[in-house]
Length: 65
Image (cartoon, rainbow, N blue to C red; front, side):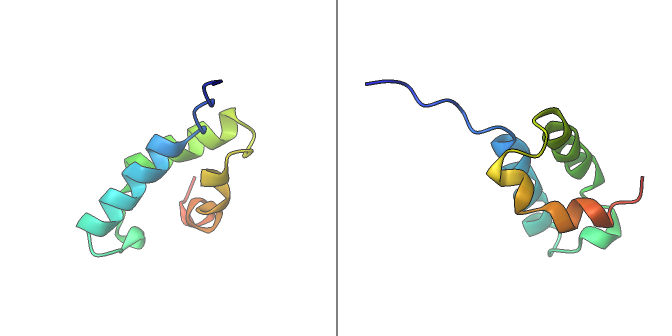
């Protein structure tokens, strides 16, 4: 049986979910800025071809550059 390739950015997306859950889902408070930046970097590297990038594209757009 062939091994499936790991989905790009899954870890980063899970880290954001954990951070948001821990902080009452308030992304605008900048409590999760670092994990959002890590996901953004991962998504840029894989040219947003990961399913994990599409589900948080609005969140990434809210983050000031």
